[in-house]
Every structure is written in C-alpha cells, then in structure tokens.
Image 1 (spheres, helix red, strand yellow):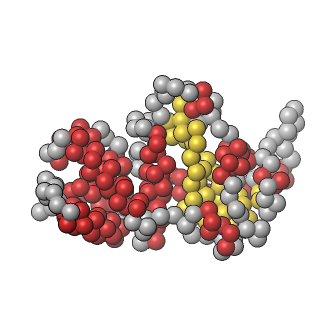
Image 2: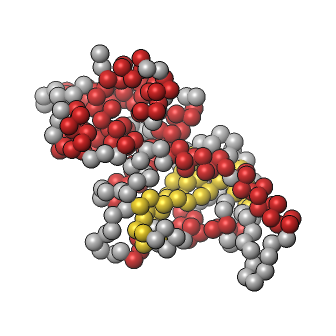
Length: 275
C-alpha cells in the first residue's frame, strides 16, 4: 500500500495535518506532475526510482516540515541530491503550469474586491555573507526576508505577494509593490502603514498613540474594531506559515524564496476553495 493511501486510511483530517493540504488538492497536483513526467519520458531517459506519488510526498515533506534533503532522502531511500532535484522539479513544473497561480495585483484593478487587507510578515534567514545590513530587521533583531500579503477579506483568498529584504519598512515595501488598488476598494492595514491615505484615500489603519499623549476612548475602540476586522489577514499568514519553510530559518539561496512563497500561497487558496 502506498504511503499516501495509508495516510488516507487514517482519515482526511490526518492526511491534511501531515501534508498541509486536502486530498482533493493533492490529487490535482498529482495529476499535473504525472502529465509532466509522461512528457519528460517521451524525450527519453530512465524511469525515476520513486513513483510520482512519493515524489510529491517528498516535496510536501520538504515544504511542510523543512527537514534537510538528507533526512528526507533517508526516509525515501534516495540520495539527498536526488531529493533536491525532484523537489526543484516539482516546484518548476507546478509554477510553469499556469494553473497554480495567484490572481495577481492586476486583479485589484477590476473593482471586484470590496475590502482588501494588506500586511507584512518576516521569515528568518541565515546571516548573509554580503550585504548584511539590508537584511537585518530591527523589529525581529535578526536577518530576515519580508513578505507583503494582500488578502480579499470576503473570501480570505490571497491575491498577491511581494518579497524584499528584512530591513525595508512595511510602508516602503507597499510603495515599492505599486499595488493598483481600485478607487472603490477599501484597504485595511495595520499601524505600520501610516501615510497610506496619501496613496489610496479609501483606506483605514489603527491610529498610533501621539508622542507624550494618549488615545481617546473613542480612538481606542476604533483601533480594536479595525484589529478585529483584520483577523482574516492574520489567519491567511498563519495558514501560510503552517509550511515551515516559510516560518523557520530559511537555509536555501534566497533567489527561490519568492517562487516558493507564490507556490504555497496558491496551494493555500486551492485548499480553502476545496473546503
């Protein structure tokens, strides 16, 4: 009996706990990879030592648990270099398929979103050999990569993401992302986006306590209301960080971080729709 079948025998909830996704999403990804592998074999070459189900499970273990290639290879009976190649192959195939994708920032121009929520989160990285200052986050007191997540409040769908060095301020990252927000779409952010009204008038964020002053009871109540409203965005970020490759110290080269963030965000959208 194959490993994913054993997982399913323990229940769909258990399957999702282990893989990070529902069975329906797993089957969609499996079908895409099977098609790509068949096309690859038409050009020649020997069959892989693992079945396509085990190849996908190995990739999911890497994203979900973020163990080393050597540790995963030991479980699947392959050398770590083979696991690396198959994980990279899965990522490239899924991202190039055109089916595993986010709506993208151009979708914000449509006006179909009544309220969007924008927030930034940070992923720790190993200390860079060069250019350490631009990656050092004063907030986290370590070197990080910053990710901006834009979410539709109504559906909790992740619309688009943007990454940068950890030192960049949340609002500067927002300005660099140049999100083309429709004038009728309301944008909700946290207090790190002071000044957003100058760019998008239809926006709202908590008010900061003035220097040597205090917030009024009305302002405090308004801040609590905004914070409660923004919980959808926090849930979306928490959903992403179930995949430990985005929450634990990122050991890989940074050039594929954006690709992996987009891929996992798209998978999370598929998982929500499959609910």
